[in-house]
Amino acid sequence: SFCFSTEISLSFLKVLRCPKTQAPVELMAAEELAQLNRAIGEGKVKQVDGAVVKKPLTEALITRDRKTVYRIDDGIPILVIEQGFALA
Image 1 (spheres, rainbow, N blue to C red):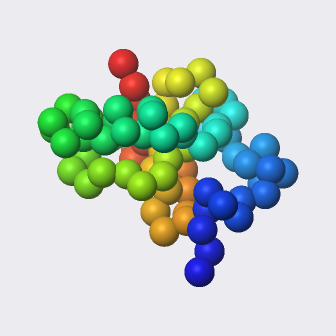
Image 2: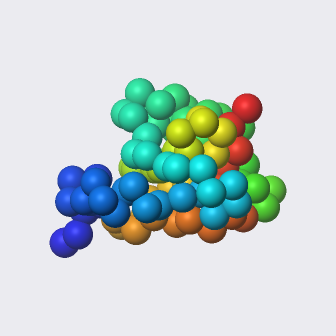
């Protein structure tokens, strides 16, 4: 099966952008992901559309300016503005 974090090519990652701001994105580091998942567990994380995030993330992309996160589901980046998470 396809696994985003281990098989993604650097050239593919270089072309991915935040759909709202066009900021470059990168894989979220394990430490950042763990911190985000703790906040999700506490019910403190909402998507741009206002929905509370209930499921912890196994992988995510974050904009290089560290303002927006997009989850990766089953190796597929979900680059949908309404489903992104704005970080404080």
